[in-house]
Length: 394
Image 1 (cartoon, rainbow, N blue to C red):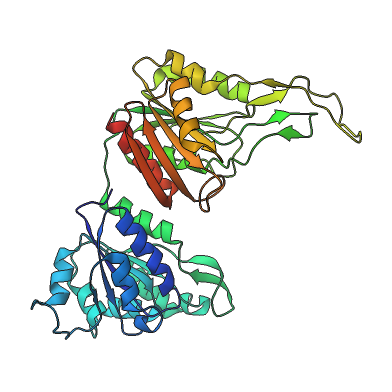
Image 2 (cartoon, rainbow, N blue to C red):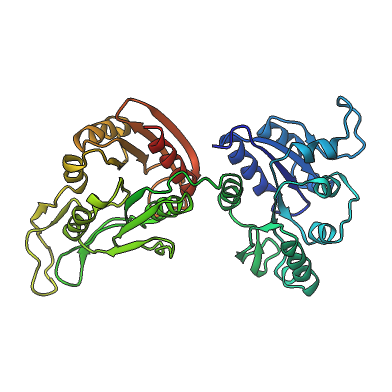
């Protein structure tokens, strides 16, 4: 995704330094050439050797180091960078950046960078809310610096409030979004399904699953960011429906989702079935809330939405998802063929960081032509862009 792009990661001296390790690792997995500069204080938290191993490049700390081939290193790093990301950005370094102070390798390099700079603050809540810090952040924003705002929560010092470093996946996604403002879906209409469906048992209780709708929402957002038009068929979701989508069709049951998809698909070029509709429903909905010691339910099969689309899609492209705990490859290939799909995105939901109601995912993408792409742990937004890339490659 980030092949041939150089990302300069500037690590400053805060306890959140350890999270920068994940940022560097994720950027490298995305194909970036990652170069790391550390302040002296940052090395007290994480060794430069750690970042050298993760980035597969030397780490710069000392402005006057002479053990490499001669070049004005802070200038060469600044020129090489397609983007710089300061993670974590302490109150100290934010103040130095705002005032143009360049008293070490990190701040000297940042002063020479002409590429976009993403600043990721992390500090105590009282420091973050200090008027001087807020003024410095406002000044940097006015100058065009990009920010990934700190999160709220429990801080290392024991306080609770805003100041915790944003999730590494969010930071990496900001880098990707800044470097890749592609508009390759202009003129394309995409139907995306998201979330779970519910099947009533007795008007009070229902059958459903753990799907949050996060994957479908990230796909919808990615299509919009890349210039496409989106119709979102939204089931029962904990993920908020993004304001950017062109049309939202709300549904509850699998039958309702089936009806909506079959009504909307013909106006679209691509159908992406990221929802997890219930496969079965009670044959009969009880008239009253059941209170017996045991409850026997007779279930009947719901309509197969993906298979129905596969039969009528014509030249349209169909993407299906396959969530399993066992025999992932075998079952995913079977689903790819039985649904007449063009792509199947297979998830082993038993893996840490994958599956339902998470911001990250691990997937194997298989195409009808036989291409297989393994996607390691990454944000669902990053996976969404990879799926769209694979669609373009068909």
